[in-house]
Image (cartoon, rainbow, N blue to C red; front, side, top):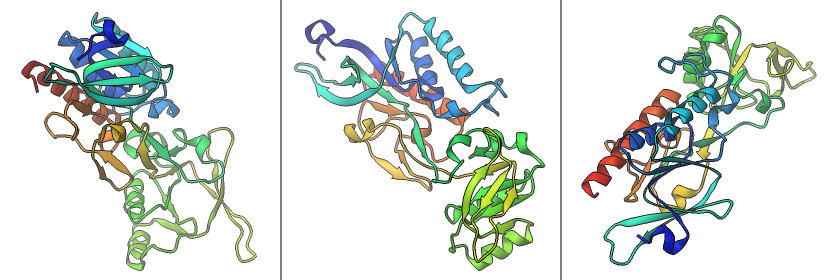
Length: 320
């Protein structure tokens, strides 16, 4: 691998791209192994819309941005760690003359070049939300995805589930354990009659009409306004929270640039990794967090980061 002096490139043993729960957890393992690690972070964590993170060991109810900042402070205490604020726009593999090991060059949006033996991709995913008036601005507050993360706070109140696919019927059955639930078909006609009967038998209301908008002051939700149909008025269905199974896509094209393989999940693609090491299908490239998971959860993302960090360290030790 070329030296930093020869290429005017900052060199590390590992570059972690993404500085949220997964990336910081990976970097912590490497820092404690005294490895030179650089964390590149654009400062746009997926959970920035949520006021609190729930269910995380010892941190229940803490703001996710505060949790990230605390983790950064603790990680910064290790002398082999460096943080770089910016967006990685490209990542390429290289093979230096006389060296048997592949290395990687990462280019940031300001033109900075970083070089490392190994990469950890932890930049997460972006949510694809339905285009319904009033929905996007309530995402993470009263428009939610995970009942385990945010169900308790709305328990016993009127809840809704937005129909997205066949899996939405199961989603509604799950949400109903927290409170009286309405499944909003939003004009969709694909719900099978057997599933409809099962939902109704469980006390779940089915609302077929298209949705006009979500209403309420600020990020609060008072109800779902339905479109007027067949001469009927545009009704308001009272609601405290609406659950949406958002589609997801990688938050960066870096994995595709590197040639990493993806698998297709129920809500979108996720990066294929080795179950033990968290290495992708490209040697030397590891991944962790929502980018690699079909089920997204802060605790799981952090755990994936730990496994990836350990996997990278052992690869460095054993020359893999």
